[in-house]
Length: 213
Image 1 (cartoon, rainbow, N blue to C red):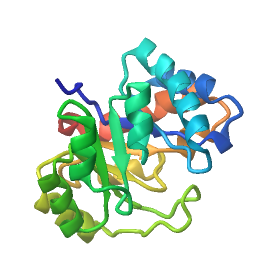
Image 2: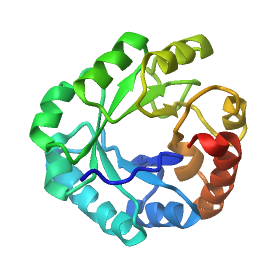
Image 3: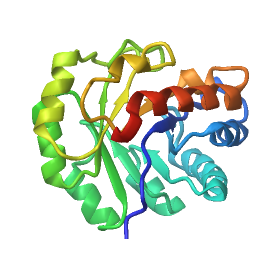
Image 4: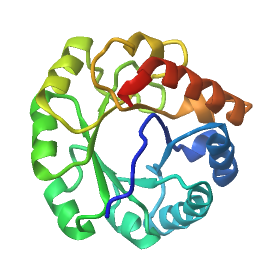
């Protein structure tokens, strides 16, 4: 059975922002983060798996699912709840075949066609963005509000927004149709007090989403 997912405040890690990733994730969870994705763009498979296992010990302690970015093998090896794939990663159908029916698969999407293909292929949720320019992924394509509406109209699976989000712009999505949550990196990990920042963001997200999450 697939784990129950709460996408409201979705932390995506970046080990370059913090010297102690497990400690940072712990503080974020204490502040109210509801989902964690380990993203290690510069790490080899062995280092990625080591960090994923360490973070999973923390997320398990707080009863929060762990998602692995890109690497289906790492997700399987560490026992993560699932994987998040980009458009250039392996197809969602192959990821589903490898991971089985009980793991969560998220897909990045910037267009309605990408969103529909992901849904038809068996994706559980979409990561849509970048909704604002972001310092953590400088080559990210930025989508507009009309693009977001078109994607929302094209699919039924949950949509998580990502890209340049923080406490100042999340409230602008209060009337923006079905949104399951917001994925953040530096707005949490780039703060001196990660727990306090997460707690404040959780309150902002809850107020923005209301009953939609």
